[in-house]
Length: 281
Image 1 (cartoon, rainbow, N blue to C red):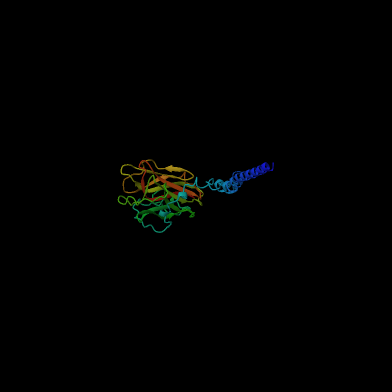
Image 2 (image 1 turned 60 degrees about the vertical axis):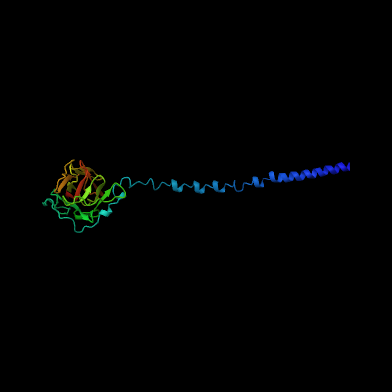
């Protein structure tokens, strides 16, 4: 009896060690189930940076299109390189255009008689001269009473825009080639004028095409206009080509932006001078 009891006790102790050894490695979840690192979701579930959409959803800048969608001027402004901003003496070629007849009616516009021979007094007259191979602006006269806005620049439809080389140096005085790649913007103000009787916008130059005549057109925020298609000859010498711009230039407007572009059929003109004549009070 004692012999069988001893054998049973020894068998029970051996089974206990075997279960403890196997179970300690296989069933102890300290290593297999310890998810302190893999299941610790503090970083992936912490959505403070990922969920903070302050920058991407802050639409204060994108929706603010107040000026850029309507401002047709210098938001893409690369024309400053052609504008000397100076009202000093013109160093260009001498004017061989129409003899000036004084048709000025006096009044608040003090720019003197119009070189184009049109009615009124000179509101402004600018010319392009050859400045190092590039057309550069010179201000001959600015007779409008408000001098706060007086700037002429050449701009393009591409960024960056490169001002074209001095054009037509042999058949005429030369000037700026105005075509489908560029336009002229003029900032002016009619503050101080109470009424306007007539407005004439004139270009001095010719159609820059060997086979076709040209024209030009203009626009402001108040109106648009154009000279008749083909009215600008391609023959030398240069002449003044006038257009009635009364609908685009009104009295008492302190923020006028006048844009001038080439018209058909040639679509290309060379511009030596620009003049705006007005009868106003």
